[in-house]
Structure formats: C-alpha cells, structure tokens
Image: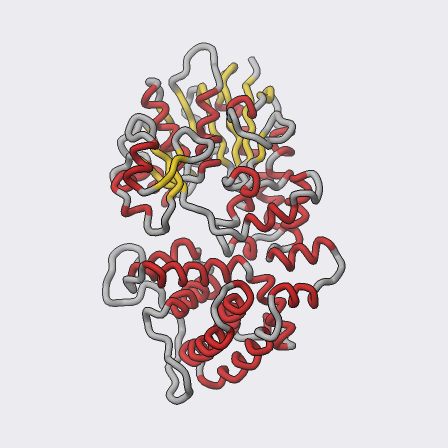
Length: 467
C-alpha cells in the first residue's frame, strides 16, 4: 500500500521497534513528537525516504498539530540538517565512530544531541526522554549507553564542542560548524568567488524556510491568495506568496482547485524570465524540456494561456509525467513522456526552458537529508546530462527564439560552465529580466542565494538562438 494514498488503521511508516519490560521513565507514546521525529529519521536512514514526504504523513496519521507538530518537525528536520555536526560530537562523547553504532541507537542519539545543543529543552528532559525512546525502538540493553553518551554531550554547550573539535583547517571547521560536507563548502566558496559570504550562505541552509506559493496568473491574484491562505506577498516574483504559518498547503482551496501551487520564489522568477524576453515573429510554441514535477510548466502554462500560446512539457520519468499532467490540468499544456535529449516533434519552438536535473545543492534548506546523500562523484554524470539537454534545447529552438537554462544548484560546473560551453547561442543579460533584485552578480547569468534573496540557490541564464 502506498502510505500516501488513504488513511487506514496501519501506521504509514513502519520501522523496527522493540517493546521491552522494565526500566524507568515515561514510555514514548505513539503520538509523542519525539517518537514521530524518530520514525521520520529511521525512514530516511533505513529506506532512503525523503523527510518532506514522510513527516507530513506521520503527522497526519497521528492527528498531530499545533505545538506538537511544530516540535516534531523541528526535531526531525533540525537533526537531519545538523547530522554531520551531531555525529562528530557523538563520536567524541562515545569514543566510537558513528558507523559502529547501530542505526536505531544512532538516530536516538542524534535526536538527543540536537535537543541538548540546538534547542532550549532542559538537559535532563532531553536525556531521559531519549533513554525511554531507545528502550522502545532498540531494547533496554542500549539504554545505559545512550544515557552515558548524552550526559557527556550535555556537559558542554554547542560552542564549546565546536572549539574542542576544531582542526584549524578553515574548510573542515566550517563544515563542522555548519554541518555541510567539505566538498559542498568548497563548491559554495567557488561559486561565491571567495569566503566573505561563505559562513552566511552555509548558515542560511540551516534555517527552516517558509512555504512559497505561486498564484497562477489569470486564475487568482497574489493579493487574493495571500488573504485566503494567511500569507504575505513575496519579495520579488509578481506571483509569489509566503505562508506565515506552517501546515499542509494542500488544504488551501486555491491549491486544491488548481489556481495556485507550491513553488519557491526563485524558481518562479526564473520561469517568469523566459516569456519576458522579447522575440520577433511567432510566439505561440513554448517548450519545457524537463518538466517534472510541474511547477514551472504550470506557471508557463498560465502565462501562455493569457498570450494565446501553448506549452509542450516533456518528462522522461513516467510517474513524474503523470504529476505534470495533474499539476497542469486545465492549462494549455501538452505533456509528453519522452527523453528530452531525443525529443523531436517535427517543428521548432519559440521559447524553451531547460530546468536541468542537478545536484540540488540550491535547495538544501528544504531537503534536509540531501547534503548527506550527494557526493562530489555525482556531479560529473549530471554535468554530462545537463550539457546534452542544453544542446537538445538549442536544436529545438527556432532562430531568434529564447532558451532559459535553470538549475537548483550553485555548483559552477553545473551552471556557468554549462552555458559557457553551449554553441549556436548568444547570452542575454538575465539581470534585465529580474528587475529590482539586488546582488545578482556581474552577469550575464544570475545566481540566487538564500542568504541574499530568501530563495533557493537557483541559477538562471537566458540565451538567444542565432539565426
């Protein structure tokens, strides 16, 4: 059964737990925020699940809301974001490598250490509840170990632990302090052009972002959406709304009926930039070459509808193509299940968007486990794919037409170097089509950053096909 389909009597996330008699302390109940946070962590650890999909299902199943839901969310997301730092502290306190600790016990230790180092939870409460939790999920024999390790962790605050673990290597120490793998620290520094903003950029990844909505033009105004969703207008996009409270965006009527959708404001801006570029001649055939899961295709479809144009949305994965169909229902968007590199409809397009698959390092604040799943070894294959998709986009664009190359990554090899290697195109100054937005760099491309703009770290470049 897909845990996201319908609610039944079974817990949607099943992880191994052991009930053991005896012991002291309050047992973790099924709706305890700490147990729910643990189950989310265990699903990520054991099944490579995505926290942003698992946790809402757990909260919904257990009818958890308000402060309890917020606490469970903070524990799960905060622990996942800070895993590298927490593991370093745990290893020092346990005098044992994290890899040698049983995964359920390690996840409980991470939750306990996060509470001790990153929250205002009282030390005795963090330790005692962690001991009760590990008895439930791993057995009573592990309780003494967890108690001893967390008591040692509690003897220092976060700053003291960082001081004691510092190596003197600037990259390693930043990686430890801000819980990023060292290779990501280096990539950020390269993209930023130095270290001046590096700590700020890394720190921004550890702040929980607000949910951004896109009011589909012609269907609802941002003002109407903000009023009905208890939100505020975005900073940069004409269609953005920021939610001021948590909760499930799917419960907002405008989301449910297709007048709006969830989309980072930076993603909206770069999708908007494509139809903003003037073109001579026909302008009724638009293409989204990598359309899944459909946010940009939906915004382009709404804009196309107002201009008498239509969008062809290509997606290589069948299940993602179906998501695009659902997301764009009612809009002039034709979804094609195909590989964008091989797509050949027999005609050319006036505007083409390439939202290329990438490392996703621009959305680390929204995907807390992603920084620990990616490695530098993943990038070369992605770079090859990105270059092939951009070459296909050039082939499918008519002379004088416009291409937008977009990635949710600041990695130079996935961004600047890809567009720099494209042939048959002339770069446009993308900054011109993001008016009133500061700190976009020297151009002609743009790199957005969470610490500068409050968006994901999106890259965008506009290119015109030569005659």
